[in-house]
Amino acid sequence: MQIYLPIAEVSVNAFTLMGLGGLVGVMSGLFGVGGGFLITPLLFFIGIPPAIAVATGANQVVASSVSGVLAHMKRKTVDFRMGGVLLAGGMVGSGLGVLVFNILQQLGQVELVVQLCYVVFLGLIGAMMLQESLRALLRARNPSGRRRLHQHMWVHRLPLKVKFRASGLYISVIPPLLVGLAVGVLAAIMGVGGGFIMVPAMIYLLGMPTKVVVGTSLFQITFVTAFTTLMHAVSYNTVDVMLAVLLIIGGVVGAQIGTTLGARLRAEQLRILLALLVLAVCGKLALDLFLTPDDLFVITTRGS
Image (cartoon, rainbow, N blue to C red; front, side, top):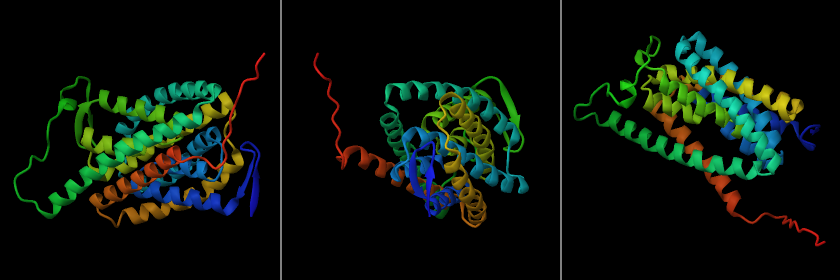
């Protein structure tokens, strides 16, 4: 069933869009990521303009994240105090990101910059997560040798410490604020929830237990991406409501399925699956950057 998207100015299959939304919803519930790192490139692949894909993709992330966080709230696996600190940094970062995005839009460099950002960030994060996940899996299978259960790093020596009871942490609010700031900028420029950066940062940098990471990540992602969508819609009118509705329908259903599946898998297995998925998307985008496009366009200036 073909449907015309008025803002994007293209015709696409409605069931394809709902399927993409459902896939991203499953990723949201399963891994604690908003899924924007996946939905935005997929929208590129089916012909949606980059500016529309980024802004509308962020809108779909809101629906998937809300559905996922509600499921985690029922299980009491959300650290609301940590989520609030992350959210404060995320709001500031999102405002800065939208400003940068609009400048790139005026310069006509949005598509190139967004794709390069995806390749760099997804490649680094995917490689780091895969390495750490494999190490954790090997330690679980061969628990020989004594390990310190809690290691003190530079993060624990910073001032302005706050007790996060749900996470069992007593750390400075500065690292969570900076993580939230970075995620907010990425949400605006790349149309992502930022979970693919926030989840490993919460585990490896802040030292949060895995059981509360997913729900807390989704809590922050929900509000940051909602704010980002609003900023994009008001400042540059790049949110296609029809596209967003179709993605949301699939995303809400998929998030519930992903949350159920996530409860049946071990934490190490979830991290490895997410790392492989991130690297696969990175590889596809990098390949598209290097391959010669089917249609070549040359812009020349007419001499006076």
